[in-house]
Image (cartoon, rainbow, N blue to C red; front, top):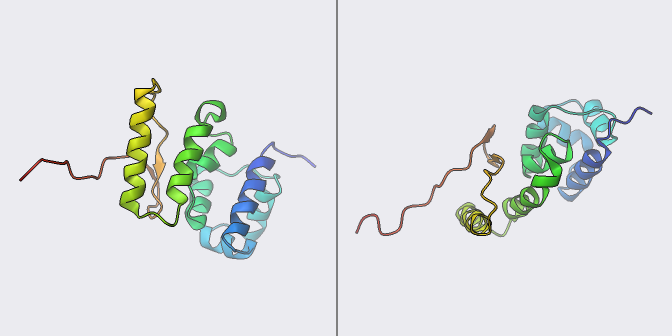
Length: 145
């Protein structure tokens, strides 16, 4: 039993998969990975690449950053609270995308105000194929008319 210290990731993935009411086979198909490989990830026997984590996150419609932290790709101690807060906002099915972006902007402004001005990790776009830097998509108020 050569665990690669990614059991926490595997347990988390299994929990997210079950919350999404997906079988292992369904998630593997949606993420474009093999069923046995995904099973090994869930059991902590394999450490997936960032690309595989991105695909799994997209299939589960969750934040890839949370998976990156749990897999040790992002600095867990420094980034976990911020990443999880962002993930909760992005995963909330009761909010529209513009509402989610507004909440993230407010959250970031409060963090900056409180002295946490470090650049945040890239945000996974739920409908995109890759991790992209966060950008402001809101219309500037009072810009015209």
